[in-house]
Amino acid sequence: MARTYARPNPRPNPRTHPSAYPRIAAAALLCLAPVAWADDDAAELPFKLTVGAYRVSGGGLPSGPGLDLNLRYTYGDGNVWVGWFRSPVLDFAQPRVGWDHTFTWGPVRVLPSLQAASGGFVGGSLAVETGDSWFVGAGLGRTNLRNYANLNFDPNDSYTVYGGYKWTDGTALSLSLIRDNRLNPDQQDVHLVYRLPLPERQRLTVDLLAKQGTVEGQFIRRAGLTVTYDWPRWFVRVAYDPKVNFTPQNMVRLSVGTRF
Image (cartoon, rainbow, N blue to C red):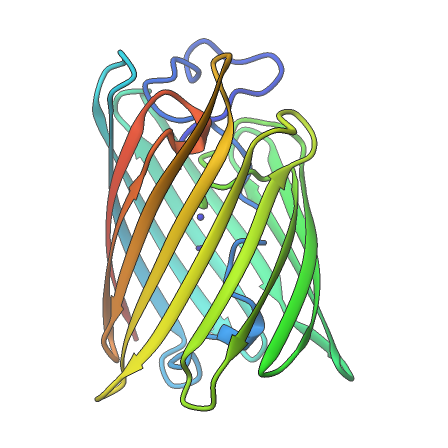
């Protein structure tokens, strides 16, 4: 939720736009794991609390931290969540709420999501997927372009296509493409995600990122990495995201959380 930081809207607010942090954008939920990768512990432990610490640097801009808190509740085939983000460098704070659900009709699953935040932001996404062991899907995200703390770090007014395979032991491999189709149509992220179940209900997830697009007039290609380790109740995630949200800065993220 997954998905901080800042993509300017067409008329950026000078108080929140000084790219010291990536650009404020809307966080569509298309980058979430497909339903075939549903959280194995959600039925037993429906609440998930995540604390994320982020730091940006480079690009000739001020370095600085950010903090995000997120609480998710899983009910059946859906989730609701609330979050709060704070950036001292931008003197910016924002609460937000979200909802997503999976509707199943025969072999087809439909995955809508909605989000809202202070400052008048509204966004959402809609994806359709099919398959069990082998699965494929596609989706579209749209926002009203109001400033928002984007916590998925992928283009959000965008289309997504993805597919993958899940083995009977829970091992899974997926490939997804998220490409901006509104304000910056050459910007895209590609994720190769490998999920490996381990003894005693532990799990390792590795997300390799390849991104390309124009950053302040220069076309870039970069690679990033996110590694998550889950225990039955706790998890930790570390990530390196170069040119985060297609800004001049690089980001390191550390997130820890618990299920209850």
